[in-house]
Amino acid sequence: MLAAAGPFTLGVWLFARHMQFGAITADWGWLYRTGQSIWAFGIPHHDLFSWTFPDRPWVLYQWLFEAIAAPIYDALGLQGSVFLVGLLGLACYAWIPALALRRDGVHPMWPLLIGALVLLPVSTNLGLRPMLASNFALLAQYLLLRRLRDGTLNLRFSALCIAAIYALWSNMHLGFTLGLLSLLLFAAGDGWTRFREPEADAEHLRTYALLFVVAALASGLNPYGWTLYRYIVDLSLETRMNAHIHELMPPRLDNAYMQVGGALLLVFAILAAVFRRVLSAAEILHVVAFAALALSAMRFVIWAGLFYALVAPRVFDHAARRWSPASLRARLAPLATRPGEQAVLGGLMLVGVGVVTLGAPATAGPAHLADCAPLRRSLVYLDTHYPANTHWFSSETAGSCARFYTPDRHVFIDTRFDMYPEAFVLRWFHAYQYRRGWRALFKAWRIRVVLLPRGAPLISTLRHEANWRLVYEDGSAFIFAADTGPGRARSAD
Image 1: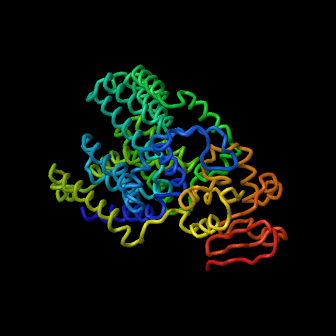
Image 2: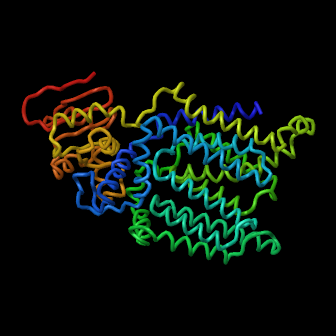
Image 3: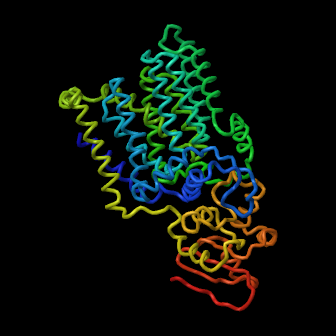
């Protein structure tokens, strides 16, 4: 148990420490303010936050998540919300899989230990964002279908549950399409199993066809109906813009946490090849398909980790039982009893809760607004010295962070890339990142003020432009203003 407690504690601590700085991202600024607006005025139909496209229709497909999460953040504050994300991650990837897999005779130690390790790559993209809704919806559907497949639940009740899941899901995140993919993977896996072994214990394809139809119909119970599917297709076709979105890029394999994820996949592949009869085809398909998606786009890492945490412990547990010496199994026998399993489950979960709520803040310090805290002073300066209707240019992160510190100031752009036309996003990106066409862009939008984080390529360019002058500088950001007369730079250093 001590051998398991060490890696478990380390994995949870590293995850929770990362959450102290990354659970509340720049995206949360506009998510939070949108949730407040929904409570005050209802679902908005046009952009609330930019001065560039105030009349552009806004498809607010995650409105329900924002309406739920905003008052929770108000009640818990920054640090409490970070704790909440950490505890939800611990539950989703470790605690719930441990409870669910006990039905299969898997010792809780394995789901808890593997879940703690999976949390490392997951931490690179997990936060207080609508993707949390997809996490728990995918988890609920997966566990529901497993109960249906083993005969514990009947088809009618399962169909009703699927309808309820998708009716909520389609109002909280576009990830409901991943749920449809999961249904297809179950159907393909069980179809293959029945093809190879007609007498095998697997669901008929007609069962999955019915559930798929129910899910697709229920997903239309949102303010936009089934037009969300067309919206998703249109977004996916904006490939030139998507190529520049960080979350849609492949994960960096030089990242130590991603290397942990790669090692876990390698070990899983070896064990699944050796013990071919332990896992069903549907289970293997989930791990393989979502791992492939994660390798193509970082956004899918959290869902690849989820299915790994649900599937992999079974084959790890089987390998341990087959390969461990008889003497070791005899010494561990007390832990294999029901009281022993409960002690492991309860003990390690208490350790996890303590690490998330006490250990991580004690060692990492107070929670931060990821990427936003360094920009606070510059945004406050901008709000203090320039009228609210000033046309100002910034990075997408600064635009989102403005919602925290200057909520009444409209922005040029923020991280809602699906909100803006693709051509506009590309012009902004080329001007900001490569300094191509920035003069034409500034002229077209009558830009008078520019706020740039330290290291932005445009800083060196504007420093040498006669028509622009530096009016503010601190350790994290610079503000330039169009030169309309003599003046001198101000510093907050």
